[in-house]
Image 1: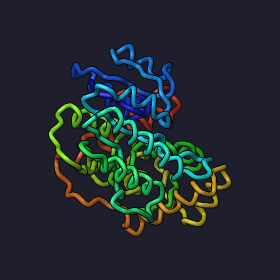
Image 2 (image 1 turned 135 degrees about the horizontal axis):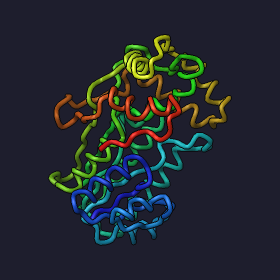
Image 3 (image 1 turned 30 degrees about the vertical axis):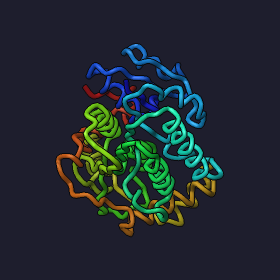
Image 4 (image 1 turned 180 degrees about the vertical axis):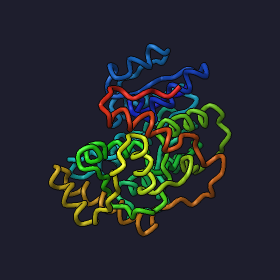
Length: 305
């Protein structure tokens, strides 16, 4: 039996679905049983627990062959100290792993987590890695995922209304765009095969590196918007816009640091691109299936087979 934390999130749901399709027993953990109802219909055991509730997580982890450990969400826009939130959840997950006797964990981390600082909220994932990897007798595999393709969905409004996609990244900076469904699928596969020992790191780099300029061109073609262009926003302006939109000073500082870190290549992949570090979903496929339907307002995007 495998436990999936954050099962109502994108990667957690994908991991649970993949394991269930393979005939594995799955315990899906999330804050709301209602949001996990579709996984229950597929055969998952639903376990309602807050990620900061160590006792509830310990009970959920007991008897598991492996756990997919996730800190949700990637950031909380209005949180006054998001790093403290990350540390609280990491502590809870670590204590639950220790108390439950689980010996195998696949954890969701991020590219750039080799650094303890200078990488925005990824610094919290560095601490997450360190905390769980220090637990005696537990085999941990960290999936350091690249730049989520789903981040492109945040640009639908400006693409439709202003005919621009705006971000703080250099236009031709190569980014390892990766779909969250591929991350969850890989987490499931690694849990099921259980081949690693000790502490391991696997970078997930997507189908290929894609710049924001190229991603914008892909979107323009898919939605028939020939005048769609990419605009790099200066870090200071980016920070100011976040604050105007209600993002806390702490989180705005973190997100601005992400832009600087990527542009300076402080955040970058370390492992070579191979069949193992690559994932199947291309930007073109993601845009066709996820971005374009939302852009056109045609309802729910098509789900992949």
